[in-house]
Image 1: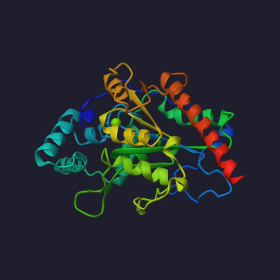
Image 2: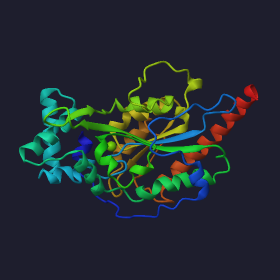
Image 3: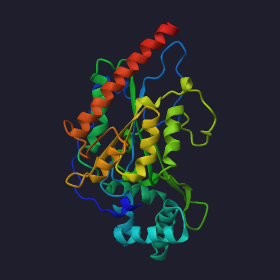
Image 4: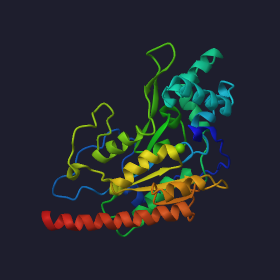
Length: 324
Ligand SMILES: [Mg+2]
């Protein structure tokens, strides 16, 4: 939660085209499906889906998403809100995520501000992003499509956030995600909206395994054993993008299972946190959160993608030896 208290500056107002090459469109995975669909037939090598998985607050947007509209709407300063939320969580030994979700609506009610689901979605339009984020998804899709090693490979972008699903739905980048896993409210159940799903730092790892196993329907259990051979998206096809300590469990799970992790820090701000993550072996690379083509983040991500594409080809060739 300390990350939530750190206000971050330097946002990008840049907007770009949504143009995609025909090849990229053909290769980009279908969007916004909640299930992965049918398993590939046994006669083909089925592990050719790459998943880029992002944290939201501090990774894609400079500030926690609630700070762009929700807190101003209820007349609350960001610093005061997170300070109070963290104090209550500490005093009550309460989960910090449940505490903030409860406190938001408690304050809205006290100030006679009604914020329903539709209003939260509308707030998403106010969320700002680091430079280049809005163009990043097409950029990466096009990079994969243009690679000579990407035949049959598809690319998906996922979001796993302890922020609010409803706000994410209203952002300009929502349609780029194959699936979004975020905290969510239950608006009808009680007088105050009640947490329907709360995604904690360690809880995020559940969703990595859902991607890995292809069990993205949240109504389905993730705990049943699935042999590695049956998992459609191996961790070695994943890159997790995060910005701090709250991402350590996800980075650790991804890397320990053969995947990759990228840490980012705000433009013009200290990279100390990233350096510590790197030195502790939590991430493969770190870079400034500047998502524009040609910047460090782009180049290092492409380097990981090149390795990933080569690995997929090697594993496919090995698979062909035994199944061909
Ligand atoms: Mg974050």
